[in-house]
Image 1: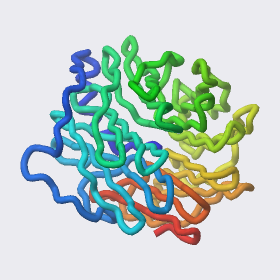
Image 2 (image 1 turned 60 degrees about the vertical axis):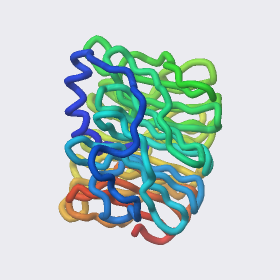
Image 3 (image 1 turned 90 degrees about the vertical axis):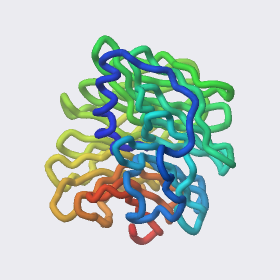
Length: 359
C-alpha cells in the first residue's frame, strides 16, 4: 500500500522537480551521519518518524517502511519475525530520502520504493539477507514512487508520479528479473498504488482530475472506466486477489470504495463517519476478506478502519491516539492483518488484527 506520511518530505523535493535539476541515483550509503540509532523493537511509539506502507506473506514475515524523521529524513524499514518488530539496516541515499510502499512474495524477496532527496526514484530489494539499492529509472523532471507489487522474482511493478509539461503524470516501472524499466502509461494523473496477481493482471489506481484506474493485460497499460463521484475525487489504494476480484479506495469529502467483478468497476457503499473522511489503502487476502484504512477526521477517533467479510463494508473499532493517521494495511488471513502510520507525536504507529480486535 500505500502511504502519505512523506507529504512533508516532498515539500523539500518539489523545488528540485520543478527546476528540473535532477541528479541520477548514486551509490547508497548505510545509516546516516552521526551516531546511528540502535536496531531494536519498533512497535508502538519507539521510533521517531512514521510508516507509510506494510506487506506480509505469513504470520511470521511482515515488512513496514517509511522514514525516520529528522531534518534530513532517512528511509526506515522494520520487520516482524512472528514475535516482535525490529528495525533493519536500510540503505540511505546521500542527503536522505523516504520510502512509501513495500511488497513481498517470501522471506527472500521483497521490494520497497520511494524517493531520494535529490529527486531520483528510490528502489530497494531484500534478498533474504540484506536490503540493497537497485538502479531505477528517473524521468527527466524527477519522480517519486509510491506503490509496489510483486508476483515473482521476475515480475514486479512500481508506480508513482512525475511531472510532464508542468503537470502531474503517471509513472510506471517494471522489473523483469534483471532490471527496472520505464513503461508507457496513460499520460495524465498519478498513481499512488498498484496491485498484481500475475504477469498478465495488474491494476494501478490514482487520480487525473477524477478517479483513474489503468489495467495491465500482459501487453500494455490501458485506462478502464471507473465510477467517479465528481471532480476532485481520487483513488489512493488498490488490491487484487484474482482476475475477478479487486478493490480500489479513496475519497472526496466522503469515503469511496469500488470493486472489480471481472467485467466492470462498480461503486460499493462504505461507512463515511465524518465530512472529509477518506480511505488511503486497501488489502485483501480472499474474496470475503478485505480491509480499508484511512482517516475519519472526527474528534477523539481519527483512525478509520473498515472490513469486508463478503456482504458489506463495516467500520471496526480501532485504537486512535490523538492526531494519529494510518497509511498502509496488509492482511494474510481472516485472523491476521496489520495497519501502520504515525501518531500525533510524530512516532511510528503499528496496529494488529488478531481475528477479534485491533490492538
